[in-house]
Image (cartoon, rainbow over all chains, first blue to last red; front, side):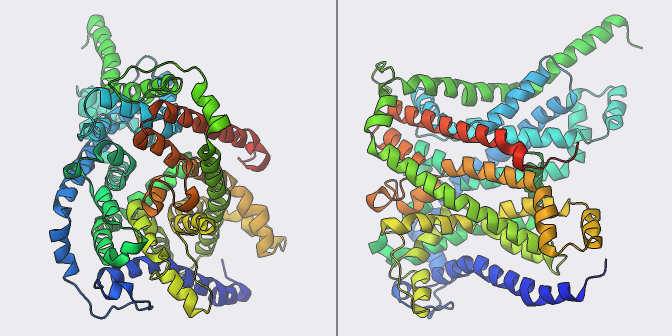
Length: 283
Length: 303
């Protein structure tokens, strides 16, 4: 379609400038974060607008390890991430396959149950779950955070998997079944190798949610500093308005916490946006 | 060749195979959805406090306290509604406007989309810490910019009237996820519709209101519902930005913060459970209203 002159003028005088300005606004907080992370205790409280600090103190990125047990926090966070990914791409994929392709009694009813748990606001589960885990003596351990993940407690992932698996040609799995493949064999040899986009999307969401999770770690790990995740560690670095002099340290930890997510985004952007879009389209 | 018996066994086993595949989910749905839901209802009628003492049955006492006595119930619900009524539409409009611009067959679409999406991948705690720094009244960049523009600085996090606007500004930064959903919806509109409208000489604005918005109204509806349900449950960003008390005069005490404080600061778990049941009913009420009225303003095709 040929673009009219009027439309072209509108684009160059209005659309592009607006998008450029918005882009600067969007990226500004990140630029400011990085800039602040390179300041010193003295320059962080200067009242000035200066994107390149003077001096540039790169050593902040090293000395932070002496002041905050970031390695430990990262390790603890990795327990969350790894169990979350296993639960997401293995356990949810198994369940999604059963909902998509295996006939079993009450499948439709159970699928409606699955959908309705998706609607349940998390807020009604916080307190009873705490009470249950408290009675089991598991508060102050990783278990309350890990068990739901390992059991694939995520209806949304199962739903995503199911929808995707339904699109894989039946002939493929029928042929394998003829050859004497079990359902597990079909899942492992036919379904999984053909489902890279949905596995990537669920894998990425699992990493993100585990990495970012705040409320559950706060409730279950709060008093146990040695079990803290990065999110809890970063929150603890925050002082009050008066103690703003450690702002550059907060920003160093923020940068450490942001970079892995930017990398995940860089490598998985396509699957991630597809996944987000899909959730919106089918929701 | 399979005999009839083998066939039967095979089919029968397949049944149980299906259950085996979903067994972990069944366990998790019982353990983390159904049992907690019921337990929560039970707890809400008790004075449950710590695991060592047996709870007393209170009947509707907790609910009476919420509705008649607790001043922070009204306060926190009011704060949350304020945040929702302004924050959700603002983020929705920004996300939609940017998506519409990106859908104008522009150059570097992928780059712009990435830039607008990036804030959505920044961990929420980091977002709050970053804005905590930027909102600082004396050294924060927002006030430095205001001073540069000869505008009076604002005590963003220490003046009750500025706390909720600060929260809304912060949450608007993360509009990217909604934007990509809008963008996909816009890209799905058949171009014949626009071509037909151009034949009829419809202006751009005419097309926007007569074609674009009706065609993506299901996406608007989805984003609105998700925004409202999420907005009622705002927690981490406020906790990190303002602390569990929600700042001066509880101006940023959102509903889930109030639940958190009752449960984990005062150990009034029964009362907190009742608060959560009330929030559940409020969310349910809004969702039902929206779904019920959706056929009046959401366009689901001609069929």
